[in-house]
Length: 288
Image (tube, rainbow, N blue to C red; front, side, top):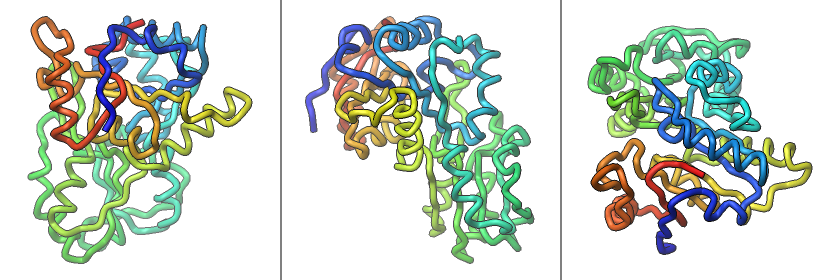
């Protein structure tokens, strides 16, 4: 593994890169408000270096998430393109139409299925599971789904999970995501397929977007991934052999930062090592 290099700001390393593939939730907003310094950093990179492709495990089509970013005051000038796990997952779902599918997730995620020709049913009769997360993530946990998932696992039907994140930070609270349900389903013996981070399909889409913006294929040695999730953002960059800037003051909280929210290099390195992961760079929060 490469030695972790701590930095104070993106400006220190920006000249080495032509493209940013930047995580969204935990890096530029927390679900309730945007982080102005992070948005300004992306805007500065885009204006002076190259395109910024937002790469998110949001389980909805990327176009459906633009309004959410607008509502959180993430400026359009901070990003050039947006690729979501939902975009990549729609390919897997279309291959399995008409199903029927047992869909798990809140009403806001139903745009994922639009135009795919899927039918829906309950767990007893489903040909596969389509999971975007808990129906109500304000109070539900994966355990609320154990019995129904166990029934499906006994039948060995696939779960297509549209959001590999286990948790995200909403304000000051961590809430469960689809990846936590997928973990339980795998533990019960059920097969799971995912297309979002850390898996290859979402990176393939992001690099296609980057190539279109650059007017040429992206040099992978000059692509920097930015994210706060070790098992999604950092692992995804590792698997794609792309450099990664780990944002320590995200979902892992005080496991990687010290007093006053400052990066603790030893804690950050230990966190990555515990997850058998490595990043080239680390900083507390994204700034220019």
